[in-house]
Image (cartoon, rainbow, N blue to C red; front, side, top):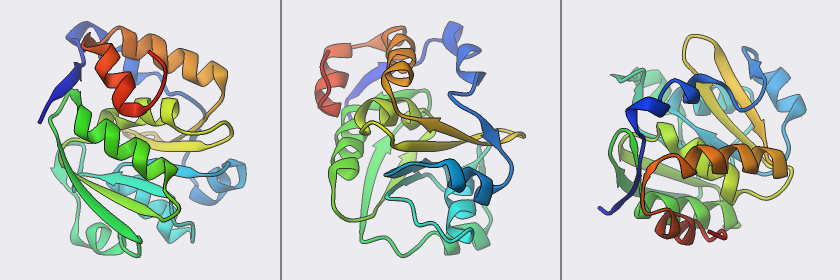
Length: 180
């Protein structure tokens, strides 16, 4: 498991700022969502599935707020064409996660990425890897679901954040298939 980027402690506060509007209603979020939909988090994935929208890509780790999600949520996350398992520690991004994310976004089939460790930071590289108009949906603890619409401004903001991470940025961007 090759960690390529690590979140420095000083940057944690900046990540609390959502990358888009926060929704508490999945139907309202989906009315504004573009294609494809990339979902990061068990509870967010569950809410979209309950609203009748199967994400094109979903990354889950079996946890919410560092606690195990209940069985109802785990059981509802099904119906994906492909399941892939990757390892990714908390506060970091591995080359394996980034490569798998990029491949899943480019795939023709719905992909569930089961992360052993933590998937929280995956929303950032998802914004870089997804095409214009795509939606990256992730949870904002105790607030709701964030809808990040992928465009040049979103990519620029995410790139600034990722460039402030510690690690090998060239390897990270290469794993994602984006320019360094």
